[in-house]
Amino acid sequence: MTKIAIISDIHSNKEALYAVLSDMEKRGVDKIVCLGDIVTKYVYPREVVEALKSSCEIIVRGNCDQNVVENENYRYARNKLGLENIEFLAQLPLVEQLKYKDLLLHFFHATPYANDQIFNPVQTNSYHNMFMGEQPQINFFGHTHIPSISLISPHGITLTTESSVYLKTNGKYILNVGSVGEPLIVNPNPLSANKYLVSENMNYMIFTDENGIYQVQKISVPYKNIFVKVYVDFVHKQQLDKQGNRYYPRSPKDTAKLYESLNFMGVTDIPMPDDIDKNNSYTR
Image 1: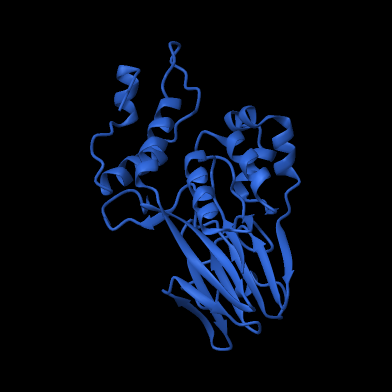
Image 2 (image 1 turned 60 degrees about the vertical axis):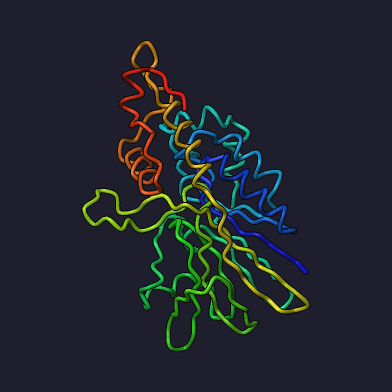
């Protein structure tokens, strides 16, 4: 049996990545593909890039990776990465094609033509630019941080709620592998300023070939306990120094989303970063 794991949207979250890599090892994965957005958001870009360089056979470029390469305002990430890793991100392709036996697999971040476009699987007329040509193909992507499996037929697109599907060699599929570094769910609170919350489970997919029978499975890895450590690391990096500067600049919107997500998970003893700034220390 061949097993190929496909991950996406790590976003400098080393704790999440290490946990998912460990899960893959237990499942006997043969190859790993990464669909980009390796960096930004969290605080360990170098560790994540170097782990992926040594683990993945295929890596494509995400919009956040491109931002760090092209925009010198991403000073924290660029300083942490160093020139060699920035150059590594710069040479990543937009899309990779793999001819696997009688299947055609495509790997890209958002669409095959741009790494920052949004594909909405519930819009039946929005899938055409997710394909390269008219031939049957199986396309893996990320970008939205929410996993989904879409089947294409002459009648349009069908979004399945199943956690796994068997793949036909004459079929067309669009598979969003979700996110390792910041998995999301729709916020059930309509009054919240945050449309999405961080999920209790990290997501990725495994493509399997068992004697010519092809299958794709959505994999969930528990994130809640890891997320607490990620949040604490995140806010510690944002603390004010004695001169009132932040080593890692805070996004108030992102921080509020993380705080609300932890509360939604039932973790209520985590202070807001403003409280940490006032005390200039926090231990848990």
